[in-house]
Amino acid sequence: MPRTDDDTWDLGSSVGATATMVAAARALASRQPDPLIDDPFAAPLVRAVGVDFFTRLVDGELELPADTADARAAASVLTEVMAVRTRFFDDFFVAAARAGVRQAVILASGLDSRPYRLPWPEGVVVYEIDQPEVMAFKTQTMTGLGARPAAAAHRTVAVDLRDDWPAALRAAGFDDAIPTAWSAEGLLRYLPPDAQDRLFDHITALSAPDSRLATEDHPDTGSALGEKADQLGRQWSEYGYDVRLSELSYAGERNPVVDYLRACGWDAHARPRPEVFTDYGRDFPDSEALAPMRDSLAITATRRR
Ligand code: SAM
Image (tube, rainbow, N blue to C red):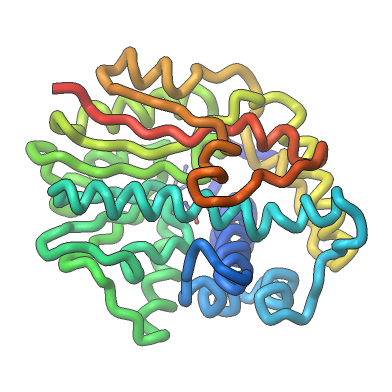
């Protein structure tokens, strides 16, 4: 279903289902030989959502085809690509905390379990923001699983990122006088281009000097990535799960993230995804099927003094 300005969702529908999809991927990635990540909460969270396709995937009842190089590359989106992406953001938060940053904000956190599984030092406050139904479901499920946040203070903020989320974040105790580590992972394409700029404007206004940000950019916001996403969706429909991923994101011209952040007063750096693979001793899958993803950029930025 096409997006609307004020659409909402739970974790089984619309954009919310993409959070379940990437959590399923983290569950699979955690079980790879020599895994880059370990997310013990991913599989139970996916089971709790109850989308049959993703549940069967995390329970090993369903194997995606791996008979051709392209099929293996497509399957690797759910393992290697997600493992590297997750690890990149994990390492970003761990490094920021080690450097003394005591406030973290995970934007569009979905089924991300970082507040529960990263080694947050004493005194760090971790905020998570996502839509109300998403936040409520995750909090309730994690409580039911007996999970306890690893962060000394963990605050969830249930608000739409197209609304006045800075006010909601402040109301939850956010302090704009101290540096913050921000992540926007798997989010930007689900915002219209002007809302993406507004998001960075708000982050900038809330960021004390030395704040840090990690995010991604997909320079090909046009058809190639959407086309690939839909190919994946068509493959999944053979297993009874119908999704048009391209309909969930917004195509069209966007400001390049690095340029935009620099203009807002951030020292911003981008690295192509294959380089991040190399950092972790992995090779980016050599397949045309993943060509649009090869151009994706992993971005880190520090707010200038
Ligand atoms: N960052 C999480 C991760 O990597 O596991 C989730 C990524 S998932 C692909 C996209 C997430 O963005 C969903 O949890 C969805 O609810 C959230 N999201 C997208 N647009 C949003 C909006 N306007 N307001 C709040 N959350 C939003």
